[in-house]
Image (cartoon, rainbow, N blue to C red):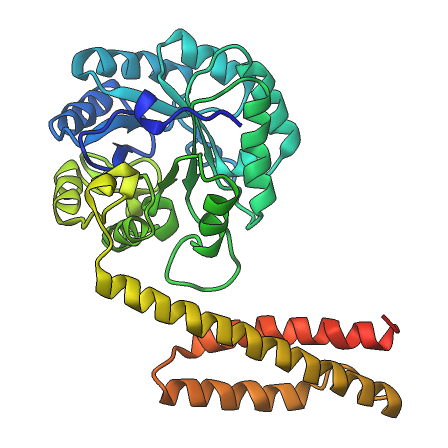
Length: 363
């Protein structure tokens, strides 16, 4: 896979790539106002704006559409900012390129449908315009990587991925569940693809954006996409999650940028001896955990044999509820998060059930 470095098409000034702008391009005056404000902060390298807005319910504001493109074109000419918009149809791509839009992105609702992604990829063949790919609304890593591979297959090399969280029925503090393990797995699967975080869509609340942006930096994301509006309270869409340009500058001022984010100062940092010592300690402990896990699975298999002899069901739910409650209590007493303990042992329990099912099937 050939992927161009982010710096080839989104150059930054020794800072993570920052893309900011309104959820929706509403009027020519609004677009120019926010572009002018963003251009004053040299850490912002591109402006995002929704032109076509896919909404869950009909009747909601779905964007101004093609008439907004000249507004972005004028803002680009006036400020020098690169312009980025979402596209969902081949005709969107054609119109965007005609109006000198610099960067396109595929939205979460688009990425969930491989047929649509394939159609858009074909429309992009031969352009090599930079394309950013949001994670699908469903928590499915393969849909995300598959969309990027479709773009690579038609010759697109300027690609980035955007983590914007995943839809969930559960009541959580955020609009979308970040499920941080998925972007981490994405990084392992496609280490050459730049990874940008969208804290606005994850949180859905402007007062939480800063914390998620910092979390993304702690996890070595390459950049941020933050919804920014001159007067968020009056925004035509997603008003609750947008921040003002002044708030954006304040957020960026307090952001702690670790070594290695977007290549920053990574070559100048030598790992300190005490850090290496503690990492070595972790390696020993992790090896011990794997050894204990293997021993546990052997006992699980033996128990499976006994259950088979006694014709007992593999799943003993009352027994498991008692075990997990005791483990969570023990973990709490040792300073561990109950949620972490439960998630870990749910995985272990699922694997144990699978082992015992295999015993029952004679494998």
